[in-house]
Length: 367
Image 1 (tube, helix red, strand yellow):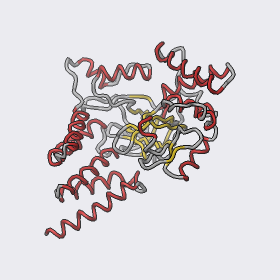
Image 2 (cartoon, helix red, strand yellow):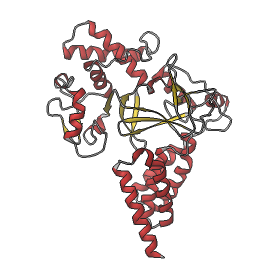
Image 3 (cartoon, rainbow, N blue to C red):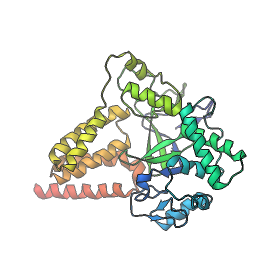
Image 4 (spheres, helix red, strand yellow):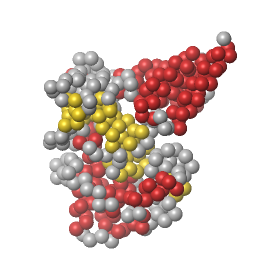
């Protein structure tokens, strides 16, 4: 049984096994990036044809049902947003949503005097001043807006879809209290992230990974990676600017002493793969996709991560197209095994089940 122990000093501990769900969180607030708003629903996050809110024209929804579900929060911000004549960036929209709905995040980590640099503070200052002006708020609201924005800056999750592509930002709790460690890249590294996180539409799910050590008498602190950046210097720069700290996990200490840095093979291969698809060089793309699948467990420290399942789903689709039936069947079976616990109601998962039936029927016909 998974046991979450009361957080102490903003730390969470658990007694669990590897590959177990230890936390599920619904967002306190969620906002899509500008480029995804018109073709993704701001409530369920599904990519589909959408309709824009007729009053504020800032949010889009795929159905009346999703619009009604989001109205619980949107009704408190809609009139204010209608005074804004241009599309707003995520940080302003999520600040307005938290502020207008009186969502309390004051116990979240983040202090304006200690945890952000001068440049970031100036951006936060300008954002708060803008909202005070358009909403015609009292001056005392300014300090509260600044405080909320600092906590947003330090506690935000970047929301990704089933392919790992970024869609927007969100605030989740208690996942925001999980500390950072980098993802393990060698067997010698012990002080590393022992959990992975992923998204099932709106919901954030935390699962233990291959680095989690089960010990009933010694509960483990749950740690996730705040950003899977392979380059040591880029990773440290990102963590310092976004979260205000320098990581000293085993991986960082090891890479700091190395004269050469590993290149980000996963992202490089992914970019090459997409190029091959665009060029319709499907056989070469499939070969590269298999290399990507082989690499993914290293970059997630988890050979059962759902994103690996979705990548296998991609391989089953492409393999079926190329008439690589046995490989397509194998990838379909593996993908179903990884995805079923989390995505059984997802339309793309149901499509995967149907494809496996088609593959099996095709194999039977060719025998």
